[in-house]
Image (cartoon, rainbow, N blue to C red; front, side, top):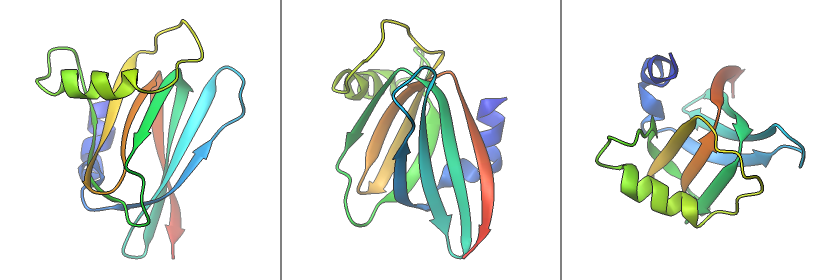
Length: 123
């Protein structure tokens, strides 16, 4: 279902990332990304986050794609190595490894249990 959700948004290809919000330091942790494309705006919320790594966050961050990366995926080693550079605050492992690939700027590796997308309007 989550793959279908991301596919329905074209994996957020060419959307711009302009905010990262970290939920309170209690389980289950959340991480929320604010994205926009033209005048459309969404928030992508990752629930049950157990580890995150953010690299190359800049003033301009263009998403190439947000993908679930499975162990049998050829890109799993890269995503997993990126995640290992993050700080793990729990021994629990979450269900999904999600990678935010970049055209320019930030790349994120996120270990979480689920994700949700909510359109928050037009700017």
